[in-house]
Length: 312
Image (tube, rainbow, N blue to C red; front, side):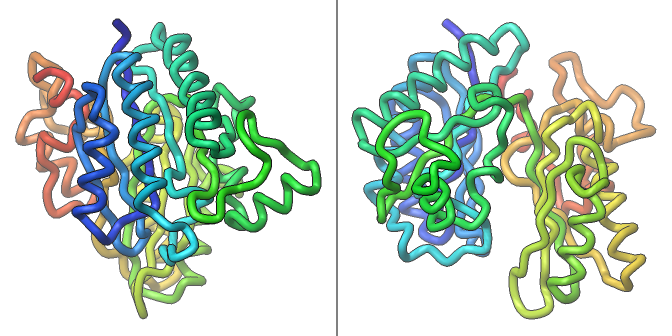
């Protein structure tokens, strides 16, 4: 049996009971929920699972079904871009040799979601010629439907009309990434400028995606995905955001880790700490404390480290 990770993102971040029910559906075939991150501003939940290939395939279809039954996208008002109730469903190979198996699971999940749930499915990552979710999400569901109608793109599986309530589902296969947010005190324009300065697509750091988002009056956020962990370590992203914000006269607040972080990234952030990983490859308490300071986190516990769960 092949062990894989999946990190489905669903468009609900305020009703914790609802999110708990959706997470239980994702785990209903035997996969294990490692972490559930709920964000009311983004109005989004990120659920981290591990399981064998069949557990993940069946669980992902069940979880997508549950999310679509419980979430009405027409009433969604979060700041995070989205095109579906079950918006993004990545399958992540934990080792390089697991990539073919991850792709097989992703394709089968897409086929079943289209056939059993009647939803349009778009493939991204290694299933979709390297395209990223942002390619489909720009402009939201209305713009995605316009592009379909104009013949600019078509679902990989399923109907060509987005479901009014559930939208579409983006299914992909990608390497591990880190989602990390950093608050700033200032206007949205500053967060957008900082995001542009750090993201790869506008000449910033390699392997980094970033958006500037408004959380509340006077509180904004630079929301990032570090999609190439070998190209730019997470603590380097945080340092660059802080420098760009300071150059614009903006104070940097706390960091927010979304989901789990690889042990290697903790060790990198804990530069100067001798032997930052124990014999299981899990960060030591000293390394966790040092990494938390570098990443502007109030606390970083072992339960937020992927390898701590895999070693258990």
